[in-house]
Length: 83
Image (tube, rainbow, N blue to C red; front, side):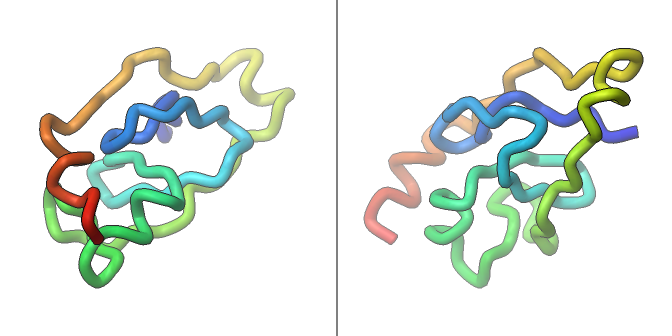
C-alpha cells in the first residue's frame, strides 16, 4: 500500500492525499512544480520514471490514513532552482 507522503521532497510543500503529486517506484514524492524542473522528468534520487500518484478515496483514508512522515532531499531546491 502506498504511504501517500504529506509533502514534496524537494520544496517541502504540503501535498494532501487528494492533491496532484508524482512518485517513483520508491515512492519519492514530488509536487508538479518541482517535477517540471527535473531533467527528463525523472526522479532526482534514483533516476526512475515519475508517475502521477493515485488518490486514495476519502472513505479509505479512515482505515488507511496517509503518512505523516515528512521526507526532504537535502539541497534539492538549490540544485534545481535555475531549471
